[in-house]
Image: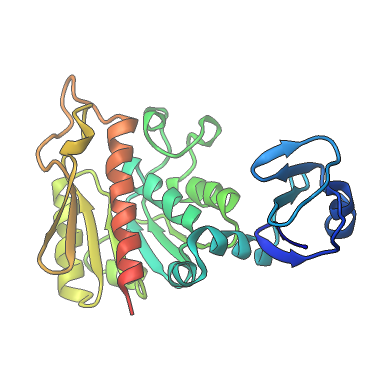
Amino acid sequence: MRIKVNERFRTLPEVLTLYGLREAEKPDADILIVNGFPVSEDCPLVEGDEVVLIRRGEVPSREEFETLMAARHTPGVHEKVKAGIVGIAGLGGLGSSVAVALARIGVGRLIMADYDVVEPSNLNRQQYFTDQVGMTKVAALVENLQRINPYVEVIGHPIRLTPENLPGIFAGASIVVEAFDTAEAKAMLVNTVLRKMPETFIVGASGLAGYGASDEIRILSFAKRCFLVGDGTTAAAPGTGLMSPRVGVAAHHQANVVLRLLLAAS
């Protein structure tokens, strides 16, 4: 009998129950899921069943985690994602959300830079927690990403980026995500990457404040290696603040552009 156990196919004896499978495969499992539904009693298994055996609170091994990710993405896709190296400049509402999305899909290495600390006002849209107020954003986000996916390599730089240090900090990255607040900082990053990192793509953002329609947020391509996400006009102003839903829409557009670029790479 052929069934799938924790995303891997097994050929098992013809007559087998759920509890028998648990005893053979993972005796300490205390959460049993059959074909997508939690099960609390023993039951017979049949050809084609899919079973997930979980020990509550246990962190999957690297091998098991890779197997689960590859099953969700398909192996060829996952291998390209895992080989990716992505830089993130700025860890506010955009950058922290992009980082979470990329860690969840298993990008191999994230290089992050921000000199700021977590403030209470950040919590309306940024991927931090109340007990992290006062921490550097780099340290707080590294901590959070390690809880999400401990097998992604995360490198954090609590530093202000300049034209002089930026190429070295993001060395090796095929893509840099621009997630700054000010037009000056955005222009600095774009100009520096275009001039000093000729093989690197830029995924930036502009115009994402307020609560306007999500479908106004677009993706534009320009200067061959640059992509810009946003509506291009809506800036923060009284009555039009930076809020989690629209910032999140833009951030996930950025993350999806990153994913598409990684998969398009040879």
